[in-house]
Amino acid sequence: MLTLDAFKEARSVLQGVLLPTPLIHSPYLSKLCGNHVYLKPENMQVTGAYKIRGAYFKISTLSPEEKERGLITASAGNHAQGVAYAARAAGVEATIVMPTTTPLVKVNNTKDYGAKVILHGEVFDDAAELAAQMAQEKGLTYVHPFNDLTLATGQGTIAYEIFQDLPDVDIILVPIGGGGLAAGVSTLAKLLNPHVEVIGVEPTGAASMKASLEAGHVVTLPAATTIADGVAVKTPGDLVFPYVQKNVDQVLTIEDGELVEAFLDMTERHKMVVENSGLLTVAALKHLDCRGKNVVSILSGGNMDVITMSSLIQHGLICRGRIFTFAVQLPDRPGELLHVAQVVAENNGNIIKLEHNQFVNINRQSGVELRVTLEAYGHDHKARILAALCQAGFEAVETDTNDFYT
Image (cartoon, rainbow, N blue to C red; front, side, top):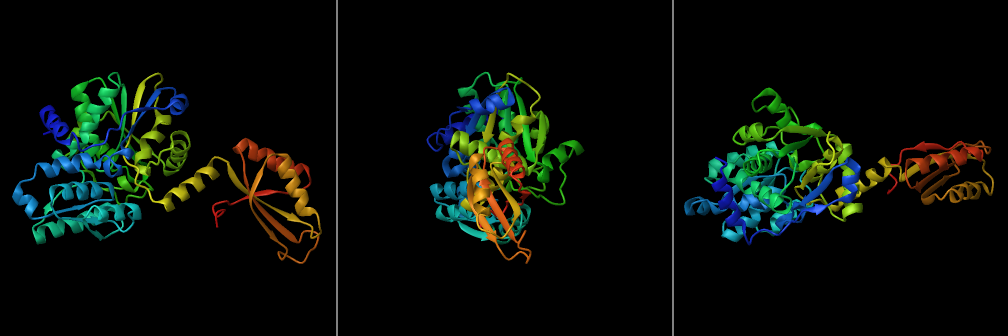
């Protein structure tokens, strides 16, 4: 069971293992949602995620015989690194089965910690099936990534630190994948203060816990489709489910597009890299129906590869109107390109890419297609630039910008 004594033991075991991740007040996010927002930056934790807490505590409780058999687990990345790190510290061999879609940085980090990595399946559930099969066939000790009460106890130690930094916290926002983190944090939070509100956050495309809570029992989704790979779980844990059911007050669901904007907020305003699953609690701030409360958003991890970061930045800038592309047909004669550039410059647009194609058609009156990608201050500025071009006699039409880096 998740008991106060168990949480105290976990806190004791983890002392000296964890990096301090004190709460960070966010004036920007506070203004945005009308509450006093604090970030719990577990993206800065050992192995780049909170998962080290549960993995290390779990392995510390294993018997010598269980350790000698070797460990195996399945993970979308962060639990993998936690197990690999803790296994190395304990002198134990570890095998990790990860989905083939796992970001490269998580795969490489897991290998660097000394674990053997097997890539299998498209989502966590596929990898978990193989890991369970290998555990049975080879006699390995299976360390489940979320459906384990000892593991959840370790994850829950986050609540101790939140209350230490902010004793009068009103709301704790916690990401939910399989439910281990939510079970641990919500249970300890309620033990420390029954009046604190704990809100779980899931991606709309993988809201297995919300579906389970609504059904009153654990259910399996037909698919888990989300850019938040760390919480792409089709079936939440049945062992942790009762604790989530009892202690999590509500579950919010977030669209993937909201995570893109949250990524920009964290990188520009707080200079931090937070992976998509960790951004769930940031995106959820806009959905709170309260004002003036002390709110803590748990940033569960920061293990994101640079390809994903590049894509998020690109889409985020486009979404906010800070990058856009327009196309215009020009007469095939000298000076027309200069005229367009002058209009853009007069309206403080910054050209970052230009394509000038003279071979669109044979009509020299509109024979040149000009595509221009600009940097702007936002949607209002973008609208002013397009209006100025139209006033200057150019029929500028906004086009797709998703390939502006190519």
